[in-house]
Amino acid sequence: MKRYAQRTLAVLMAAIGLSSCSPPSIEYPNSQLVTERRNKLCENLLKLLPPEQQKLSAAQEEARWLADTSYKAAAGIARVNDSNFPGWAGNYLVNSRLQDRGLCWHYQHDMYRELRRRPLKYFKLGCCVRDQGKGSEHNCLYITGQNTGWPAAWVLDAWIWNGRLQVHDARELDLDDWEDTPAYATMLNDFYTEGHTYPVEHWLKIRDKRKWYELSIFGMPAKYIESWTPEAQDAPQLESMMKNVKKGKKTHPGSLINY
Image 1 (cartoon, helix red, strand yellow):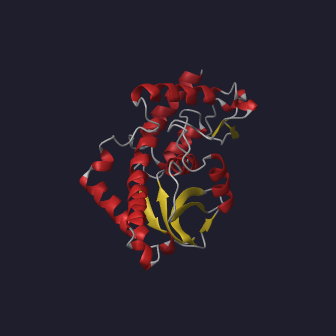
Image 2: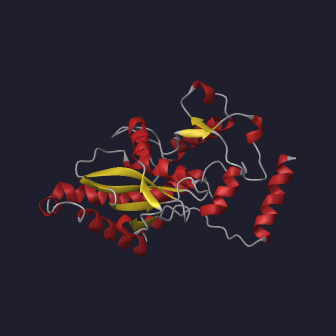
């Protein structure tokens, strides 16, 4: 029955014209276009700093690492998540239990995890949301200077185009719709400490184990629980995560990342 429902939904999605957007290849972040975007993000990050800091080689190196890692990690996360539809189409597949990952806050958590792999001296990470509580909520993360803050920040959106990172100047967004969410950043900072060693396949939260969440043709959101809690031990999605971790140890041995 579940397999029949999956096939039926797949046919319906194709019939209404949703176009596939496969995860970016490992070569994608090094293409000429994305290399130019990485360079531009690096420049824009440095402009968030005081003039005397912008000239420091350590600040320049940190901005370069953040810019490069942001684009590379976004593509790598999409490959790990094996998401084949971007944005809201991907949300429907996730909420219908036909795909493990692909919600905007999944990408927010995963990008945050990757950018916490090294201590930051000149910059800091934050979380933001558009239309909070309005049914079209969209979560992202942002980078700002250590001594500045929202909205003097660059917003990173890896969700909308399935790992093809979109970057926005928060100062040019409609700040009546967008807002800083420091509590989210605190939660992620507490779990993913600077220099952590969690692999790229690690998920902070997973769907809970209740049977009626295994398939919902109506695309209703599931309840999520922390992957490290006792309640998660026999959840099917924890098994999916561990399979990804095991696969990752073979595909990128000796490295916590695949990008």
